[in-house]
Image (cartoon, rainbow, N blue to C red; front, side, top):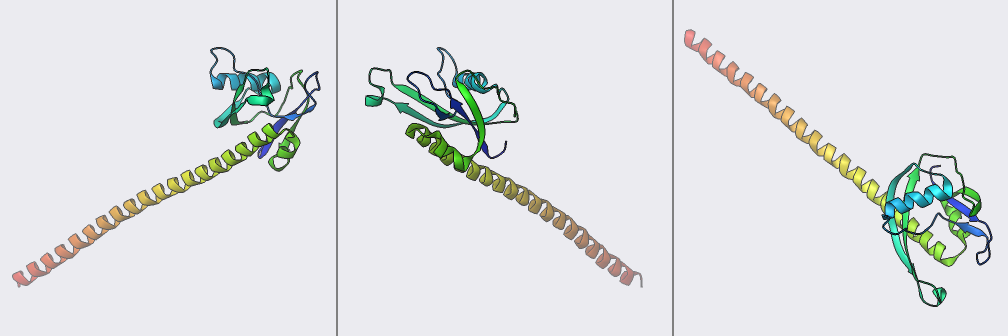
Length: 178
């Protein structure tokens, strides 16, 4: 749905509490980022028709928060879909297409909120870029329309000038015959 974001409610498991999150996952060995994105989205939601994929941000989690674990390098993408049927994975118990204004509070964890803030900043930049692109297209079309009008006016002026010259020649010829 337009203007909404898909969020998933994860099932509580040992070591993980219940809560809302966006689609996420891991990059397999020798897997391209876009392939991983499409795979994870399909695995967690059943969505396969993704369009407008754009890199939003990269991030990492390391240090005391990851004590005894490998650091994580994350990549966040933004995309759209025309599909509406969701088939959530066994990792999740619910999903919601949520208004953007409500998503941040629902995500809960600080890292996810920061990622969402990056998404909102990216979305605003993308909207501004799209608007600038539309203005540039309009300016380009206006410029070409002005050139076309100028060429038409030159052709009309040349035709009128030719008619004026012919009229003067005919008038002088008429005087010569007298």
